[in-house]
Structures are given as C-alpha cells and as structure tokens.
Length: 138
Ligand code: ZN
Image (cartoon, rainbow, N blue to C red):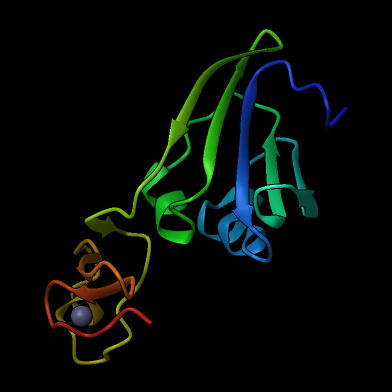
C-alpha cells in the first residue's frame, strides 16, 4: 500500500508520540484483514513529534477508544482519495468493553456476559473507575 495515498480509509493523525501501538492494540486492528500503516515519531510543527495510523479500508473505528488514548488526535476520513470528513475528539464520559476491571472480586469477573463499563471521574487526571466496584482503570 502506498501510505501517502489512501483511496478509501481513515487516517488517525496528531497522535501523541509513543501512543500509536496502544491505540493499535485497543482498536483491535491486528485482528482485522486490512492494511494498516503505523508511522511513528513524525516531525510536527505543532507537537514536536507525533504518530500517525493509516487504515486502508473503510471500517468503523471506535471513536471512544481513540478519545481515551489521545483526545488530541484527529480523524480524517478519506473517500476516493479525497478528505471528506475531519473529526476531533474528546475524552469519552464512559468506556464500554474497552478496559477490563482488574478487581478479582468485581462482579464483571464472575458474570462473564456483563459489559465492562468505566466512567470518567476526573477529567484533568484522565481517571476512569469501574461503574460496578469503583476500582480505578489504571
Ligand atoms: Zn469492577
């Protein structure tokens, strides 16, 4: 794939340097049969260094996951080689099935069918807590 010219897909830009792999994992991109380019430590006038992920397929991506990893990232949607949409992000108020609760006594540890839900409890510290047992996400 020519990483400079995606015809139909998504470019996640302005990812803070070093976060691309975490985003790649949390988005589950390794499980998908699509071309993905991860470009690390790109020089950026605004940020110094940044990471970029280019997905050469028109697939749905979980914007909550991207907002959680880096609310400063921007999403560019490419159709027929043209930028058709630019999305900005914010820290999501809740995260569903993105993180797993680490508390072994949490109800989500025994009830397998329960969604793992975390709620943003402190925006400045980017602190999420399990809605069931209040355990911190990180
Ligand atoms: Zn919990």
